[in-house]
Image (cartoon, rainbow, N blue to C red; front, side, top):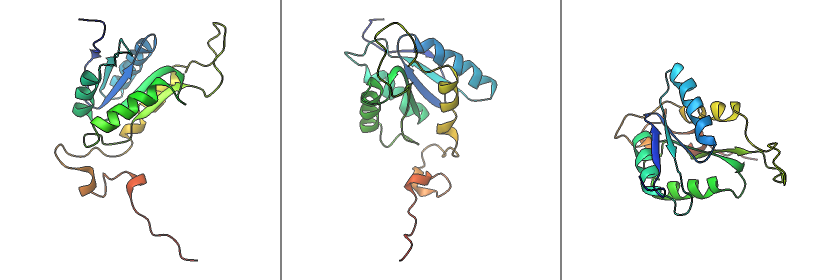
Length: 162
């Protein structure tokens, strides 16, 4: 397999988790913990960021309907934002929830090898539950046809009159 192609390192059906570098191992550990809870995470190792293999990632997201991007950098202006934007554009009608990003805290990156900004293991494990907090829609049914599957941020609420 060429280095510029992403690789599915663990098959799953509920949530796609995309990562690269040392965070792949953390995501595999989170997927193992999720399996004990009855949730199936598909872990995709991006392997290369330039060029970015969007095709493999998009195929996985179209299968699961959810994406969590995990990386060591801060979530503000990070590679996770670029991945989230590309997948949101390409898989808009396949996504059942917004793309989530898990990364380091929004702090200046330390110049030394201190790992103060790297997300600890519980953060990706806690975030994996968020896409599945709402009931999953039936396959082939758009999310906007059922109010129970409609995310709360998409529901219109009347404004109070003053």
